[in-house]
Image 1 (tube, rainbow, N blue to C red):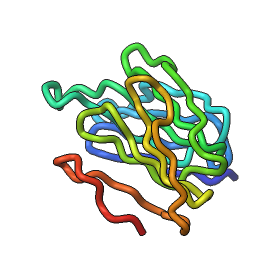
Image 2 (image 1 turned 90 degrees about the vertical axis):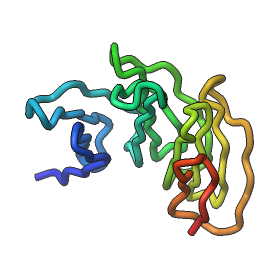
Image 3 (image 1 turned 60 degrees about the vertical axis):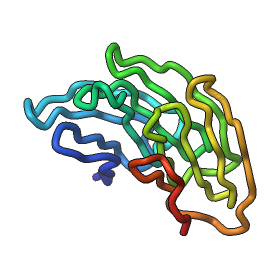
Image 4 (image 1 turned 90 degrees about the horizontal axis):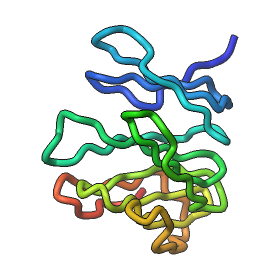
Length: 148
């Protein structure tokens, strides 16, 4: 029996994958049905959704990080991979998307933090922070929060 990992859960969506598997499934909780799935090149470590402020009830993009240190950007409707970018040398621990949807912060096992330009689809900044961080998070106004 394989272990199932819940990557994301809210009142609308439930995203799961089998541990050490590259297939991620997305379920709509209202209809209790699978609405999509995607295959990833490595185990997915975290996911985040982006929704434009003017369309807060409409989810636009899904971002997924993986054990290879990459960030992948998916369009939700239709469900297609837009871009995959290698950001870190090791597995990404945490990712936070800025409320503008233009940038994201990531922290990794390589003891570094990166700023990802989501508009251009590339890494804009990379810095060694000296310790492995487990979490990075923007607050609702878009200011960077503390790292652990």
